Image: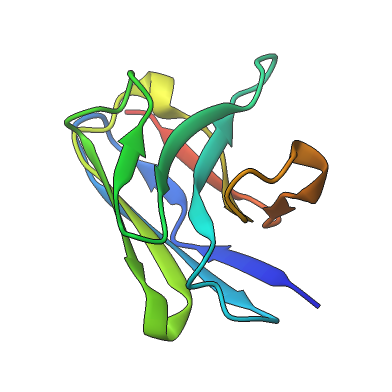
Length: 119
């Protein structure tokens, strides 16, 4: 059974940094796209960052240049380093894993971790 478990969320002041981690289990994820989405209250879930099996990253426009995604294929983990955080980054962040070309109904999701950016 596939499980994605996020950690590292919390409260941080504007301009601060946080690092999120996601531990995946239940299979080998070397061939999976892995990454992060987020959902703020009253808004749709949006892409934050993804990394391909070849470790090529893609970022949402609002986080480009501030966030960095990395993966450790041997450990089945994916991390998100978030710098220069802004109040609009406040959201629940979800880890995601899927095979290339998978439809949305075949995506795997973690339970989410809250990130709050506030002074």
